[in-house]
Image (cartoon, rainbow, N blue to C red):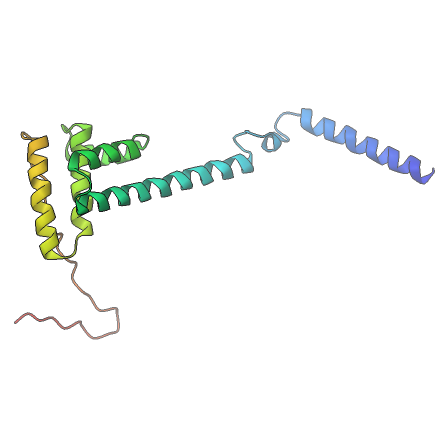
Length: 171
């Protein structure tokens, strides 16, 4: 058999094998684009989800910064959070677990207040912003329980195992 004939027979064998593999159900399901088992489709899906998550976090951070600085009202910040989290049911489930009768706007406003509260470390600024947000919240939701605006208590400082205890300034 000549070299050309050997190559032709080999190529014919590959074509027949490829045809058989692609027609047998289950053998190459992961090779079909869009197949649930397609690793590239799953990778693209995860990349998209990651990008959306990063954009959502950046949007929420920018919204909080604008709210704290006074460039955005509580209503505007809450409306922006509604848009950012409209396709994330877990966000709404978590908020509704604490305030089951709240509207979407009230829940998002509470979240905006909490985000602002947790971002502020300067006591004077925290007091100023807390007063403004409390007044805005009362105007928007006069019948609702007001949000907590006091600072979160700092966690106790604990020394790592094997080191002496951290000194406190209590008498």
